[in-house]
Amino acid sequence: MKVITYLKQLYLAHLSKPVGDRTIYQAIRRHRPRRIVVLGVGDGERVARILHLAAQLNDAKLQFTGQDLFEGRGSEGGGMKLKDAHRRFATDRVNSRLAPGDVQSVLSRMANSLTDTDLMVVTNEHAEVALEAAWYYVPRMLHEQSVVLCQLPGAADAAFEVVTRKEVEARAARCHQPRRAAA
Image (cartoon, rainbow, N blue to C red):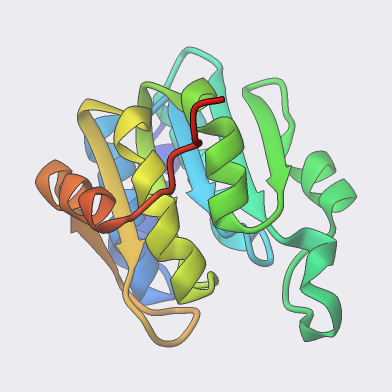
């Protein structure tokens, strides 16, 4: 590995701003994920850094899925447009798939196609009710070594905490998903 590349990786993991994102970069350096899911793309800066760092650490092509409201944010703003996200995240090293919509509807549609996720990053950009219901779909997406990082409530630069597999399953169990009635 080139010295410059190594120093950039160290910078991201230990000196980068916002401070709260350092946990993500440290997890990427430690686990070298190939299948990454980010719930809440936001302005795209964090995701761009995540993908760049993960691509440097992996020889294989990355599988990235990003969920966001994109244009659905309305006048709130603060996010990027779907078209811009496609341009920014799809590279020769990253197979990018973007999913517009709220977190619960996206995961209900896509959870079965996102199995074997290595790293899942959940930002605090979601409505609390939608995020609570979305945990129901997360356990089927993970394997034994998966890392789930959830941003603490607060500002957009709030810290991330590791959510254990046991806690993911407990959050999923608290969800009350209605079953379809037999015809």
